[in-house]
Amino acid sequence: MIETPDIGLATLADARAIALFSRDEIEHGLRWAWTPTRVRRAIEDHDTNVVVARKGKAVIGFALMEYRTDDAHLLLLAVAPDHRRKHIATALMAWLEETLHVAGISTVQVEVRATNSVALAFYAKLGFEQVNATYRYYQGIETALHLVKELRRRDM
Image (cartoon, rainbow, N blue to C red):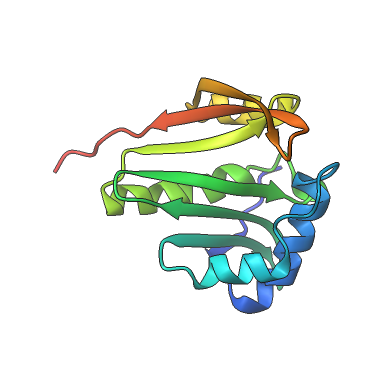
């Protein structure tokens, strides 16, 4: 079943929930890097969008994207286990890609654990392609695959 969550920018009040989510769903097996303080800094950063998907008041998914002059870097993306496979991650990515089009950015990159076959399949479905790999990228422990997506330019 497809859910239609409310998607919008995160508030400082969301920082702890996002950080705990990152620790449990993304950073498992690693030292906790995306702490509440770091997430709050990202929320306050003018070059970063922190986006949440909500069901009622609960955060059920989130994404962090950093914008640079010519490209963007997807830093984190996660959906609560009981809300997965309902197109929430796809909706978060669509929201972010719209901001990329508005900003005139045509390339987005993301790193994924080489062992995360579900994430790799998700990004491939969205049009990301592997361009590189870095051995022991994650805290000297795990290999990262570097993925890039070239966004289609809209006719002016």
